[in-house]
Image (cartoon, rainbow, N blue to C red; front, side, top):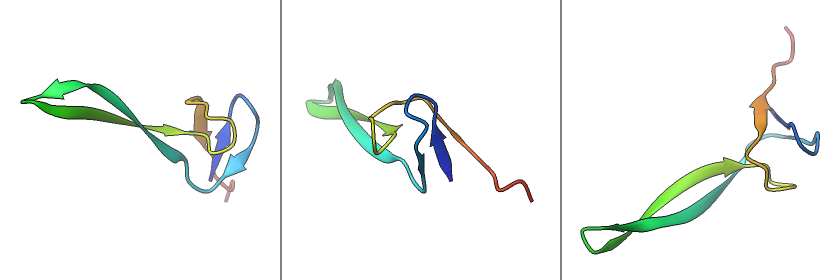
Length: 51
C-alpha cells in the first residue's frame, strides 16, 4: 500500500510514466518513473499495516 504526500490518496500500486530522455544508438531512450495514479505526483511513500 502506498500513500501520496501531495493528495493524501492511498493506492495499491503506483502508475508508471514513460519519459523520452534522448537517444541511445539511434533509438529513443526512455526513463520510467512511478507516479500517484490520482494526481500524478512523484512524492509518495510505502505504508505498512502496523502489524
